[in-house]
Image 1 (cartoon, rainbow, N blue to C red):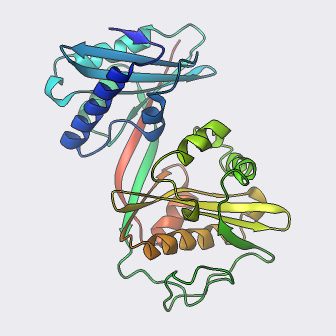
Image 2 (cartoon, rainbow, N blue to C red):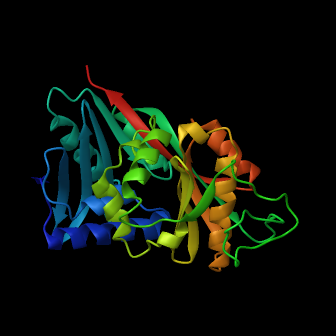
Image 3 (cartoon, one colour):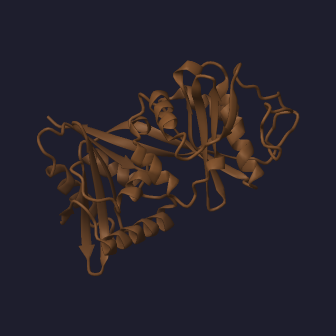
Length: 311
């Protein structure tokens, strides 16, 4: 089973095809955004690729990223080659490849599918983290009766309570190249305890800005005289909106800014003609789950991260 530091263009195409086939059958993407973006990245010491070739196809793929003593894994098997031991062999190959300093292994099971859960449990993994996908239609949404000064004219208005910003704060669209450093600072502070989001680098931010879906108008920045207070980054793909990342600097937490930014992002999406909005948040963050549930979002899917500590 080949283990590679980087992938050829041909292999990337085959892995993307594998991902599409899994999505069509399972109704859920087998890999997260970071894994897909990393397919074309040059070789680095902390990332490895495992492929299972079969004729002209790749029928199994796993990507491993290590951070300190932890290794995080995502893997998938082509739907036509499941229940033949391919997934187990792939996972076991990944497990035996780790150096002694790796003490904690984590594997994502997107959609919490029974077969993936059974495989993880049989290999000694335990459920460690749950990521919720929430969704709602904007039809019938209660929009505010008024917005703060400077809000775009096309944002919807209704009969709900007026949206207010903290004293001295205002909002505007993200300015690429000018706001990057401040955004990274606030993102790191807002997600200091988050296992992925809080460690974004300038390269990670640039990768997203290079994506076809990136729209600076959809990244709403709140600021005051001291600098950036928070942001709401929205995303639109295939006609569906997403609360991509919403972060509030610790100095502005508890001021109602998070709720105001949530409303702002939804209004921006509605003004673009978006009717359906999704978001992802951790089960272990009841404050965020409660905020979104109060806005009419319902849990529609769970992704589970399984963990195993090596002795």
